[in-house]
Length: 231
Image (cartoon, rainbow, N blue to C red; front, side, top):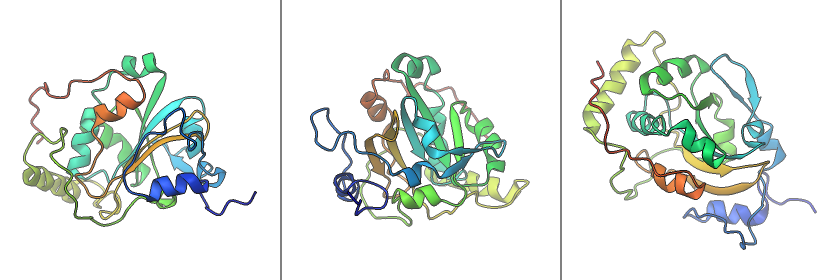
């Protein structure tokens, strides 16, 4: 049968566009719906500018894919710093892969990983084609997102630090579209979609432990962090 939707089956399209994200339970008739092959074939780039088809990232196992706003977003930086604290052994025990996708040039991947301590997989979608196909929002939707457990310091001073990094960096740019929002998906094996949550604004990240719980990864304590001063 011809698909009326261009990236998902009709059932999952309703789920994605209907607001609140939810997990597809084993008995749910929506379970097992798939990402369209045309989206899975779109390329992402690694730090060496090697192209990888998006679908290859989650072909073999369940994968948590976190789409970031941009690499100079202070809130995203704090979120990725906490993603970096997830032990690889926790992911291996659950047979789960963790991937971050940004929307800057690949040039910025290495410095961002050094800044955040992130050592799991990371790629970029510099043309934001996958962001667009997945319906990630642009602009700030006014919504009460509550206090993020991953923002533990002053938001204004942190944002000014990010602006300073932009101005003084060797490649002066904002490392992505500053209006682009991100989101979180659980995909795989294959093109199966288990969960999707699109951020409404920069504070609307899904709490990491709530995502880890969905894929059977151990709870991580994000409260006890060493004091680090970024100059």
